[in-house]
Length: 458
Ligand code: ADP
Image (cartoon, rainbow, N blue to C red; front, side, top):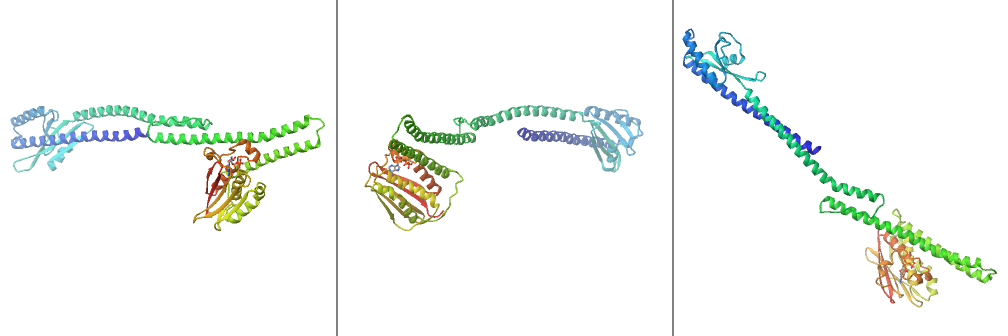
């Protein structure tokens, strides 16, 4: 509608102006010819000296004949007045001898010419004064001509223009409808897919053609849905993993308790052993649940960090102290290498959890008599904590996956070491919350080096 309006209004204005201009042009032209003719006739009337011989009937007849001939030729009516506004001659013969107060004639008697276009009558009145030999105004010649022809041709033109305008409007309507459906069709297509995605069908994609804005929008939308689909998939995987991880200890507990229940006269020792096993399965579930809670807390969008000045060297000392019994059990050397004193802005609890997981892994995945070394260093903007071990290492294929939730390289072995597969996921989440990063290099059977970078100032 707006397009139509914008196209149509100027067209109407243009057509309106054109018709008025044409009418004005014709009228001005007519005015000029009529006034010129009136002047010529008045000139010849005065030259022939009709007014000097008005009493002479012959002269008057002669005048009438002459004027009638001119009137026939020109297609207009000619009247001649004396200075008292009395019609001396009328080519129609109707008004001869009458006194008529014609405004144009009165003007001509005063100012030499008088003119007007009388719209209701559709006629022009052109009057020119007649002078005698002494340049005195003695009368006037009045020409009355119909302008019906002008009005007819203008209205002809008007009709044609209206026809053109109607045609143009029709063409415009077709074009506007075509263009708008062309513009709207891709949007409708995108909208349909958006609605499907909103209903939860994340596999829906927009078909993208070309390189215009719609294609860009379609591509961006597709990228977005891809991410949505991925995150939906990882959520589903996560739930499946959690259930799976919790089901394993639950079925062990069930098997253990059933086997006692089914036996009669079970010796006390056996009870004890089975109960110990059950307890360790419950412990395992507790680990998993507390790890999960940690991870969920770190993953939440609105997680807030309790940032404070943290003495990194002290923090690492206490982490190592807590883990030293574990290391001693396996006769592993646990070494802290403080290259310099580093104090950073950090949430000590969360960062300490992250490093604990790394050191714990180092100890877990290093055979007895090995070494786990924790080093701390800094440059002008970042602190670096390196945890290196002389353990079993991680193969190149596995490296990209070890930070995934519940990912464990060797499932059976990890059941023994008590890993949940959540430790590194927790570590990474905590480090990312500190705007830091984590990298790992590892070689199978030689060892691994995990490097955590945390900005010193937030
Ligand atoms: P887990 O609780 O099983 O240790 P993590 O997320 O901490 O889970 O680690 C994921 C996997 O990465 C582990 O199962 C292990 O196979 C491997 N991994 C982690 N740290 C080391 C390491 N220092 N040396 C060798 N393998 C490691």
